Image 1: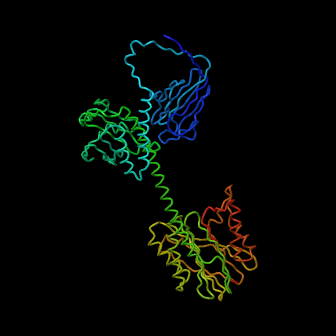
Image 2: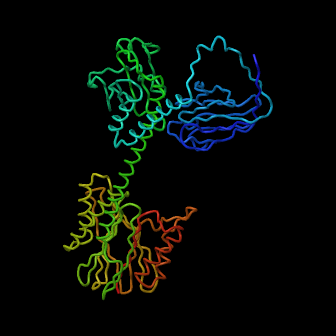
Image 3: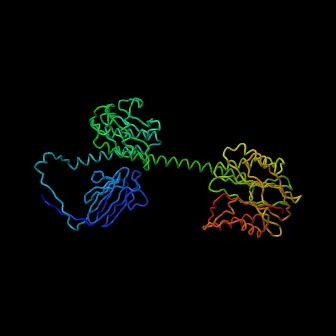
Length: 543
């Protein structure tokens, strides 16, 4: 027996397989967490790797890797590591965490004794030698085949095509004649076959699958039966006359998606010895391909939704009156700014005659397309009734019955409807739960509105609404705004409040300046031009 000496002060881990990444040092007395999670010291960017996969530790006794209960396992030189059992790593070893493999190398330091034994006599006849060219050619062939299979899988347009390409690639790379992609069993035990390939051209309906093999692969292991040894899979395997079989789970972010199942009902000599590892690699690729498919589907759906919402916003703009209006009798200004989605705010200014003008402001509960559709329906209904000569109470009562009986979205809205009459110097209005408005008099004073007593619209079809009246003279203005104005917050969560609204419009000279100054003030208060909610401000009064 002879001795060689080597020393290790620290270990360098060089990536040799898996996602592209840089190597790293394990320094003396260092503790490193490896995995996919954000808290890991070494991040392994592969979906099949567990969030906390393994832990490397360096101490006086040496460098050790401990598997932390990972789904797809950790190995040193091809030998699987048991959960929570430290395994020694030294220079020349290969550490593998799922698809990520690292070669360990060290530097000279304190000698560590290593032993060799002279076995040249008894072993010489049993050693097989492959030339460097032969080894390279074999490795290159398997690598090219795996790359080719990966390209096929990643080209899939949907789940069914992914399954078809996967079983074809599996058959090409393993020597098995039958392959199937199976969904996990349903509650009733039924198993859906996504894709099936049989060299004997038999239909999947004529094929029976081993449930024991499927169950064996459900935790991330490769359930493998080769050369007729039924092993741990019991009599069911023998009853099915299965000679060789393999089952591997396809996981996406630790969630079981499907199974890759292969079997042979008679001895097939051409099954590759690395079939299990090859299939496991393909399953990881299939999981990544599926994740990419879902990501693409989400992007397409997001694009479609954004297009629809953009079209909805454009349609809403067509229904909004001119921003500023100054006539012989009336003056007004408004700002209508939908949030990131289509707006649930309602705004309309409707000329009824030379001396009468209707104003409608509302806010539909919720956001998005549903709120926008309900807003449009309410606006169209109110426009028609008011243009026909209906009083505010009649228009609001009618739209309440309409929405209460027909809305299946369980939505409601606040609604303020008023008619300005320049001859009578009077405002006739209904406040259906809106409440956000102010009265700016010609002398510069600002009054809080009367306490609203109207009901929300769309809840009770039998709700009754009554007109209220308010004297309004030349120079007086009514300012209405959505709830997002007083509720806008600073970074310290302090709200803008209605008192600041009153103070600002009291100092404003015109309807146009009312809305302009109020919007600027609220934006400054929130510290961002992106307000938290839909924004509607309107000011209307007598010249």
